[in-house]
Length: 178
Image 1: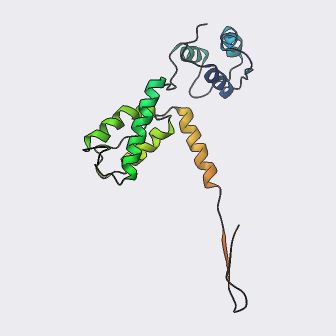
Image 2: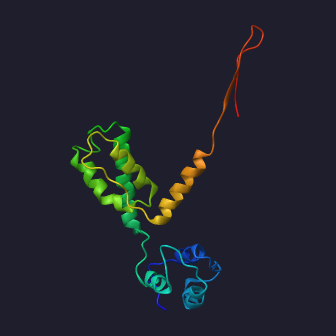
Image 3: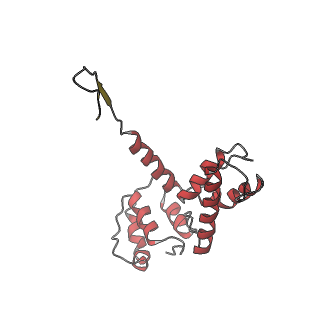
């Protein structure tokens, strides 16, 4: 079977892990691709990939994961940092940007790389701008969306209690956190 070269070894291992097939990480991508038929036999299917033909079509097609080249990533990071700097300076047009079309143009260039955290932050800050032209949401893969959702659950579970004890003339006020 032919697997598109845009799928990395890690992508293939994660895909099969989601479907209850565990592949040895020590194997090379070539070895994994050669043995892929045996892995496909043991797959348990879900809502996204419902059958063998869906799985084979997925592996034959280009990977949905976004992977910019080094030059593209440097340009994306520069534009993201530029938008973040503009936002931290209270959205003032002083030299970073001269009018409201320039940040919008930069956002339209980078929003499709939403798997990068700096792009997501730039989108968030741009959307808070009073001079925004349109609301722009970053494009993210399902894996990144799931990771963000899991991180939100983790951060919500920590709650702190503040206890204040009343003071007397001899004892000062005591504040403690649990």
